[in-house]
Length: 171
Image (cartoon, rainbow, N blue to C red; front, side, top):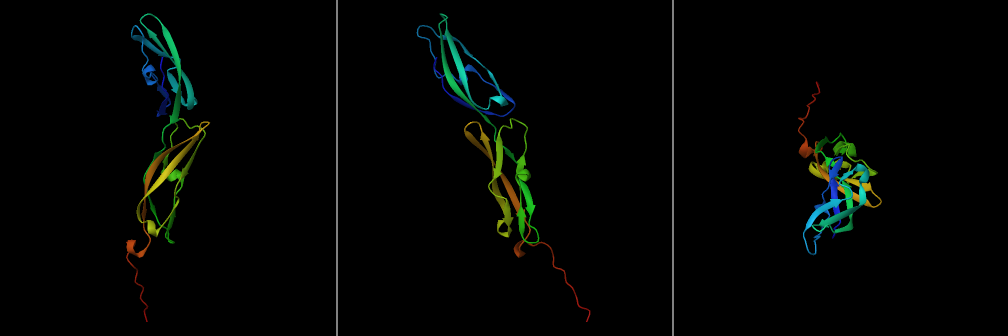
């Protein structure tokens, strides 16, 4: 048997893998391979990280060969949502992770979240890209990202859409 390592993104609560996912060209010397099998086919959130997988191949003469491969099972990227923020009277606005992160209950595993930007002012009027990063510690740290568009409105004379108010002195 000839194995290859494989990396899979776990997008649900489990994934089913096939022997072909790990077979890197196994062949029979005198006859073709008739059967391929794995020691484990289904992987769950609890399997995130590196897993040893055994591939066994069998030819038509019932000769068997086994090899080991590494399955690296990673969580999916976080999901972001676009938002609009309005500058306050001091021409400032701020956001938090919760503002752009669409939480999911799939495989939350020793992860932490961070955004590359939290504060905006009148120089940011319009669309701004904010990157949300998920850091996952699986013995080795893996990072997954998504990008949200934060649209900043209001603030500054060039963006002021409120008409002025005239106050008259009765004298």
